[in-house]
Image 1 (cartoon, rainbow, N blue to C red):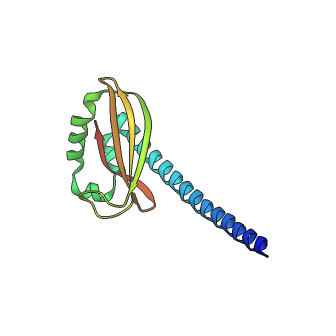
Image 2: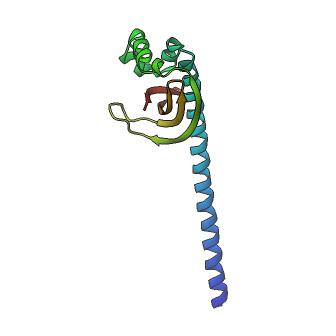
Image 3: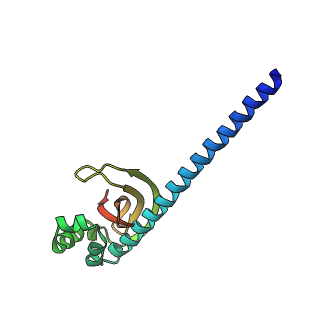
Length: 146
């Protein structure tokens, strides 16, 4: 009787662990999908910037960002902070971080994507693209080169 009870307890623990592992696996899979979607959107936007197509990059940004800056302001900003680095020689994904809070922005869904980039005029740099999930797609809200 005691062995049957211990056996049932062990069986319950194994089943609970299995359920917990399934939940963790599901959460990790969802995180991986979210990161991959945000990274793809960041890379597509960066390719526009790399090509000097700042007007199209502006159009691809979030509506909230476009409402706070004019296209000509954005073009001048990108020409001043991105063009001096020259063409991209290589870009490697470093990591991503999800947050619901972003300083100076309303709560939402944000993904910060970090790349290690080598430019024609700067051998080692980091690029950070912050995106928000807007109308079923990821849109850029901030870009930095360090």
